[in-house]
Image 1 (cartoon, rainbow, N blue to C red):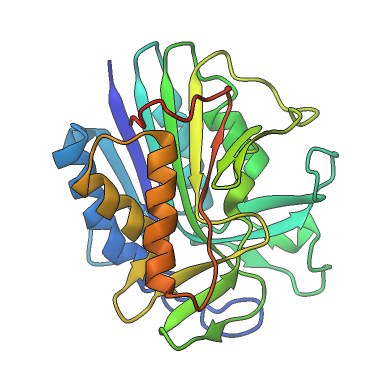
Image 2 (image 1 turned 180 degrees about the vertical axis):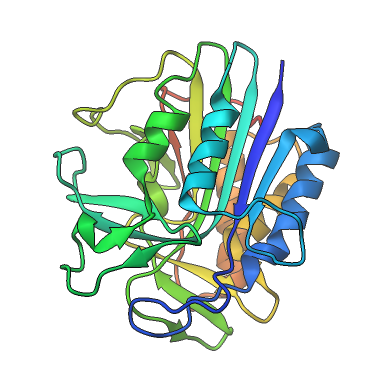
Length: 291
C-alpha cells in the first residue's frame, strides 16, 4: 500500500487579475507547511512521498505551472493499485468558463489557475479561448478519477478561492471571491448539511474503474469562499486541520458538520459558506473519513 500526495499552494504574488486589481492570496503559502505537518504526523505519509508545488521563491519547490501541475498529477496516479491512498490539495484561485459539451447542469465548467495563466481581453468573458494555461474540471476528473483502480482511495481537497473579476473587503479583513467549488471533480453523489443528493452521471464522463474518490469543496456552487487576511488562513483549510487534529477519527457526516460549524464561527454570522463533499459512489454518511 502506498500513501502519496500532491500539494499545490499559489500566492500569485505580483500578479494582477482580469480587472487590474491584485491577484495576491496571502494564505496558501502559510497553510502549506501546516498541511505537510498534518499528513506526516497525523496520517502516516512519508515526507518523500509528498510532492509540493508552490510559487514561494524562498523554497526549492516545483513551480506550479500548468504543465508541472498536470505532470505531477499524472505521476501521482501512475501505477495506482488496490490499497493505495492518494491525496491532492489545491489552494489558489479558480474560475468558470462556458460548458461546451452538455456535461454541466449550470452550463459552466470550473477551472483552476496555475501560476502561469494568462488571458486575452478581446475574447468573451466565459469563452475557453479567453484563457491560456488553465486546468478544467474535466481534465482533473480524467486524470484523478476516471482510471482509479478497485480498492484504491483518492481524497481531493479543493480549497479554492474563485475569482470573478472583483474583490471586496469586509470587516473581518477577509478576501471575498465568487465561489463555485462544490462540483470541481463532477462527482455525482453530493453530501451537504441539507442531506445526500445523487445527480445523474454527467453525459460523456467516464466512470471510475471502481476505486473510491471523494472531494471536499470550500462551498456550494454559487457561494463565496472566505480567507482571513490578517491571520493568513483559508477558512476551509483551517477548519479541516483543526477538527482532524483535535479528533482524528470522524465519520463523513461528523466531519462535514464540524467543518461547517468552525467556518460559521469564524464568519460570526456576517456571511455564509457551506462546505460540501462529493463522491463517485453511494457513500454511507456514518463511514469513517480516511486519507
